Image 1 (cartoon, one colour):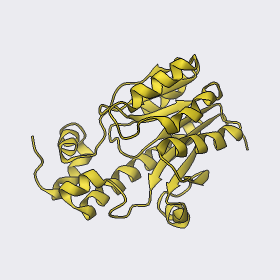
Image 2 (spheres, rainbow, N blue to C red):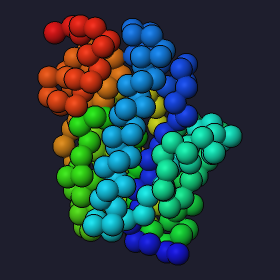
Image 3 (cartoon, one colour):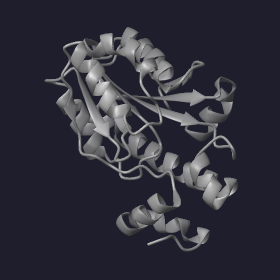
Image 4 (spheres, helix red, strand yellow):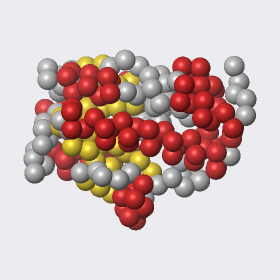
Length: 222
């Protein structure tokens, strides 16, 4: 049934060699996968607990496409499980958002699993900003973004997403530039830091108590 708000978590099957590859080069594939799983599960539990009170439907956009049964068992109780298409992240976001807009969504938040500091406050800020803006961007400190909330007014932006420089310090900037060329002015949420490296892990240990569960990986650089 149509629902005005959706949250779509983009997630990969938690397999060594497929997730957190930059961190895996520093701490090993198994340890990096453990961190990935814990971040994803924390985010998922947060979204499951608040979807009724905040009034949104919850979906998983998963990769690889054959991992559907595994993802249903791992991140359970979603309202929809959507396989990601072949292509870069822009292709995959555009396709999934297009599908959910066709279901009658009025605001869709796309969020990854790499940002331990993402909270319900950021999710609500994105939805609230889209009451007066066509989209809202949650910028990551490395130049990418941790969340993107889109309304039907931002649909012309979807074909521009595949052409953005993904995994680049310019990703967020280029997205805003592409939107401006379409006459779309988005809202900006507070910047947050992803967890992609051992240095990021050290930073988040200092600021987020639940990250201390990763202490078995040994000391982090200060």
